[in-house]
Image (tube, rainbow, N blue to C red; front, top):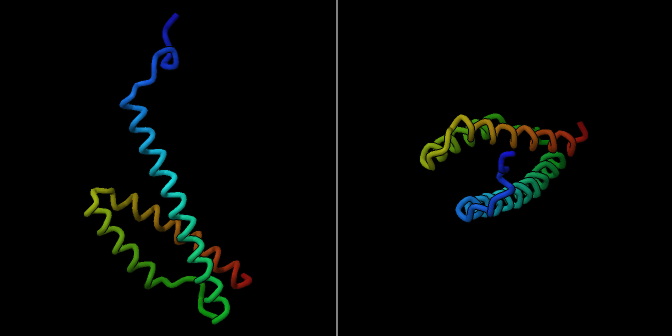
Length: 101
């Protein structure tokens, strides 16, 4: 019979790393929630003023800006672009719903 990892005392170094990851994950969720509260207000404003749900020029500028920030932060810019595109697509979907479409 072999020992499983759960048979041993927790590794304090790994536990510390995981606690930091958990804290960062919680912060990310709270930041995304705040971002979506703001973009919800933007969607309502766009619907009221009959502006289109999407702004491709701003989206392109944002993606370019965030890719540069990712490089500076030593984060894969391809990953950062996929992530922000996912967020932008979800925001646009919310704006389309606010518009009644």
